[in-house]
Image (cartoon, rainbow, N blue to C red):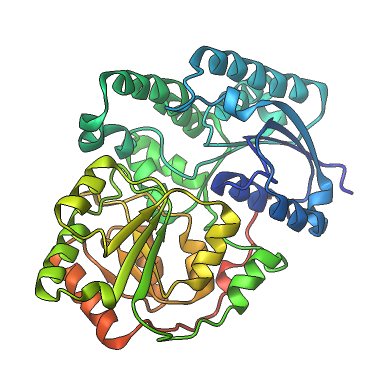
Length: 412
């Protein structure tokens, strides 16, 4: 075991199964350090726990759990704001105390929950050049377009509108990003587009310095883990029978829009009344009330079926079983669209057909096109043409090298 030590302050951590907990672990698992983790308690995923028990890199992690995640991070359902603020203070103070009591060469913080950067900043401020601060971002905070989505905000009740502003101020405050961008020694992003978007929001005379201390670690997988091996080994039977199931997993909210998809389905049903015998859309996860209303008004409930959120185990099985994976990208009229849906990694590992509504300014569009997939713009005719192509030709199977997606890049 190396004597070099790293302190990780990620909020929740594996074996909690969440996009950001997995990103943090993948950033750190091959790093040449003994790693202490100050983590918030969150539900354990037993299948992920089994993977970690077989992963030799996990042995160098010493995880110290502190306060409950759900009692620290408020949600619209659990409005524990005062308790959350108190626990944020206690959690960051505990991490800072840990740094004072041990000799660490590196401190690592993660952007969800973004208040972890407060701890990183205060540790860096106290220790200066004696420690390197690495701040990781899976999404932008400062000038994040999701904080200014007028369509969604208009639908909120007065109480929810107040709660939304409180949530943004406490958990998604752009100040957390600003202090990390200014004081961290290294900033880690998940895509070039995200990095370019975030850096472009700062003064031109500072952008070169921000680029110099930036590092892009794309979404990746751990080849030794069975959960990934199962996806890679799965050989889907093409054209096994109609209707073809086109399935989306995850929330549809904010700038992840589907109005034009629903309009396309309405028009296709009018042109081809038996379309539900050929294709069927399914949605697992949050769906905004305005989309539910549109589905009913357009009389396409037999074409677009929505379900509640399901567990990761169920989700994995649904991914294996469906004919086509659906990806609804963030729609923004900007040069750099910084958001990359996390499920794209599993989609690429499965190498089956993807129905992607993804504009050309998106990292998902670049990634999918590089591997031979067809994406369509957020346009009714483009969506219809893509769906008619799938109907006429059937879902395709893809074959490409997965080596570029292996977990080889890590924090040094």
